[in-house]
Image 1 (cartoon, rainbow, N blue to C red):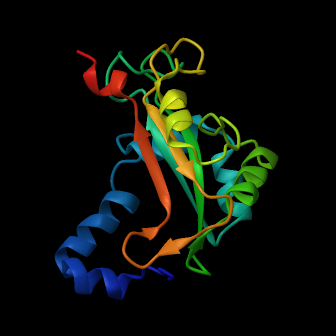
Image 2 (image 1 turned 45 degrees about the vertical axis):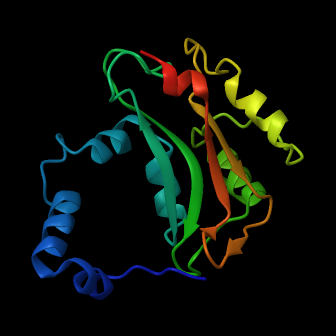
Length: 173
């Protein structure tokens, strides 16, 4: 399956007013208030990546915005960004894992920690999800993402990718 979002499709799903509101938040809102614009300024690799790969959408997580418990090494209240995927907007699919991480490393885009390639063994994966974080200054691991080496789709769940959240993370107080 492919997914190529466009303005007309968005209008059909959410209506004209909501579409205008979404695009306004992205393009017209004060760039000093918009967290995504802040990340663009703070992380120097993102703009060149976007300029070089104009058909790609960089997927990632903004960090250090949920309070002091999970700063993931980012300090002074400044948000950070870690990429975890690339969506090819032109072709309507995500890149295979190896191609994605090769490009991210080549372009020096910071990424979520890569824990290696493992055989799908649920007990081993649960154990891996419960280990301490490998991010400096961060003890608790939130969990792990389980991805296929080659992109796969299933008719019921669509993209085959899983997140295994650690019990320690869920039980934190």
